[in-house]
Length: 507
Image 1: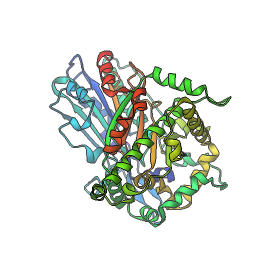
Image 2: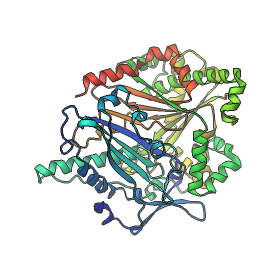
Image 3: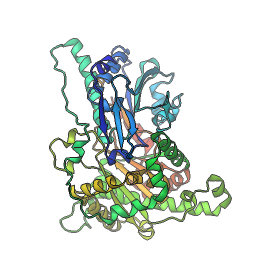
Image 4: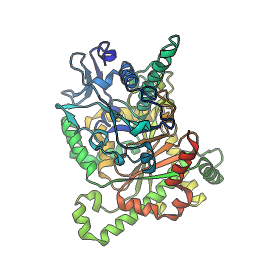
């Protein structure tokens, strides 16, 4: 720990609207490493090296030791006080499970004989230690008889986005790998990296002139009313408790599916044949259109079933979130803005540089069969909306959200209260399988099982196999309806099939 505490400087890091809007959530992922050769722990990801490397990596990410604060004007900031650091929690423990048991469970975190729901859930604001809001939790869990281990990392979302999260995890792993290499060869140079966490960089590309606000930005943000304003002005601790209660008011469960690279490219090619001239659909365009149809249909069926059992609906909850009539489906896609602002150092920025593309589909559109022609029409809408998130649009959003403190709360409010929505986070370009601590890349990388309901994460499959893992966070009845959708099940492979491929292919 001294590698960090002896070098850190006192500083104030002002957060911008993008950071503040994600304040009540966290970025959490799990990485599993199999030790098939049963190498001793002194060789296979040694505990001492991993811990020293962690604090060494924090030198590049001092914001992870800061106290979140709110100014008298409602603006959030992080205070890094070298004499009163707010350190993340780091632990390294043993577990009486064999790695094979985790594999057989489908890498189910709930298989562990421990409760990680508070540490790695979303939100995590109500997780206090000594009255402080913990900026992150990192846990190394070693399985029985040196069979393997897992690394769980959770970072409060106001510190960084998913891209920045993977930058930190890769930095930690890179330093651990260097430490092991330098033990036998002290000529190996230390890997030097450059990261930007000063939020003034985030504003350097934004015009000082206020531009006209597009309807797709301004209209939804007015829906929160008084409650959204209240959320913006209460204390960070109270805001976390409220958002946690809203998030937990709905039962959620995880569902996993595997899509091979060939299957996805075949579908994309068929849909591409119906695209207008000059338009090339991405995997994201086509897969998001497909997901909008199958998830929208699953949610509608669940709504109908609830109204067939009114007493059960009342018992399960009286919020409009459960009983409200289904509306048009709003599909929100997280977009990494870094490549879109044309600044040379954007890739080094670890703040929240996320923009959202929003596409609204009517109930009639969602209830169509996902033919190639229908998918093309929907993919075109998604393609156009995603393309519209350009430098000017990003600047408009920033101006808008910085205009009034309550506006930055809209994304979290939206996901906690609206029933007919789908949030999709495509992370197959993130370097999850670059997190190599010196013993090879992870066998499996997954998101945390806790997230707002109706979130979909598209993760990369292990590079030895290729393809995509689609992770749903759904209400149990919606999950059951999705599993009965013949079109969806004809596209995907069962998760068990992927696990078998993983067992046979990964060494």
